Image (tube, rainbow, N blue to C red; front, side):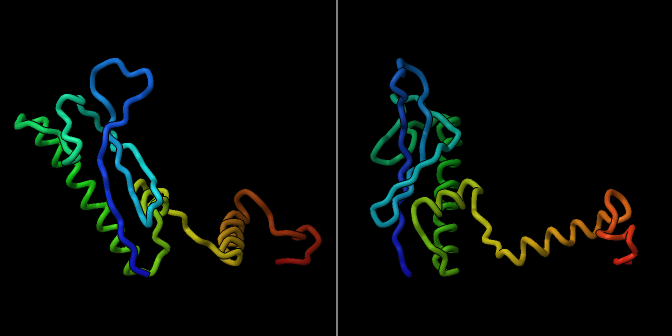
Length: 139
């Protein structure tokens, strides 16, 4: 299913804000639903261009910040495209989770048991003994 995604970088001031740099957030919007995450960067509100979603100016630190935001935008768009091509469920929240590395791995119950059993088997003789080994039922 084809979905459109919009990205927006914006400053999010706290209610206690007085002055100084403000955290830059990235908002994912898919089908009218929003999810947001911090970029880990901040910018002085006087140097922020809200329409462009980037810092304004020609200083080196501004260029580095804008380059970082460009890379984040490319990464988010690439994830969206991979999810679309892979027929994954694309929502603002799922894209954000993949973006920040919180993608959920779907595992079947059989897979969980197989994983547990193989771990337990590797512990036999080291940290545990086979079940009923003292009765001679399992060798």
